[in-house]
Length: 422
Image (cartoon, rainbow, N blue to C red; front, side):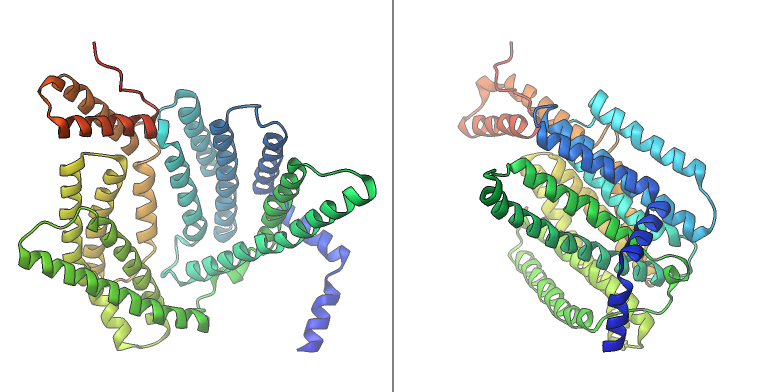
């Protein structure tokens, strides 16, 4: 062990570091270009915060981050398939630019812009894992590759944290002592941008495997993951039992569930899907009757709770009306039904379609000109206009509800409807 460690340390030379950097630059030039531009623009905004308004600063930085992820997706797809996808790259980057024009110039997404950015970034991250392995017979190579990306993605910013803290402390102590100069906040932010953005990305990209190492068929499950999974299984079963007890309680009492229970069921469903994913890969590695049973029948156990979630959503909308979050929750509920039915029908042969379908639906509901945020905004605005025409006939409770909806529109959409109608 000591010999191998000594040999490894000896290999870390200036020439080796230079060769690694040059190889990474040659392999991912577009991704690194977007990242460098991201760092440069971020530093510009740090030193000139009033150059453009804050919202547009976030939009520009988000666009550059999305471009870097998209370029990485396309490069990995090219390497995995062994051929260039030039027109797909042109089309993908053209769509990204088109969305940017639609969002920033036309303003069609409005207040849902943050959600749209999250949807795009989530889709690009999932594509990074599954797009290169679209032709595989199972999902094991994709998950092995994803675990390596995750490990590199966690270690890279941690490695950048060391020089960030060290250099900041050095400047903080030495500059006032030797030069009688105090570093500004902008100086420290610039250091952080370099060592927490540009440096980690270069380190991360240098750790991205290629060739045969991308297609490892043997499942790699560390021991600590199995231990954490055991605790997670107990937590999921306990959580499910609590929700079943609540469902039995309201059934015996013959009353409707609390509207907020739909959020609790959504969390439980997310936990169950994570557990199903884990059991799917464990079933390929070992013959466990318990794992196979849960893998086969857990979707059926989810169905009664999905009915509880549906009733809770209907009550929430009936009591308080439509909002963007409730539209997302209702769509999530329908997606849960579809996922459970397909899992029961196919006996969970593949799982890649679960995150892919989720991301696709999330994007369709968020990035198009007509999206859940715009639908909710128009619905609430029209509802307020209709109720204002009947203001003279309202009681105190209805007046309070109208005021709350006006405050909601001002807070979340920046639309002031508190002025009396003419």
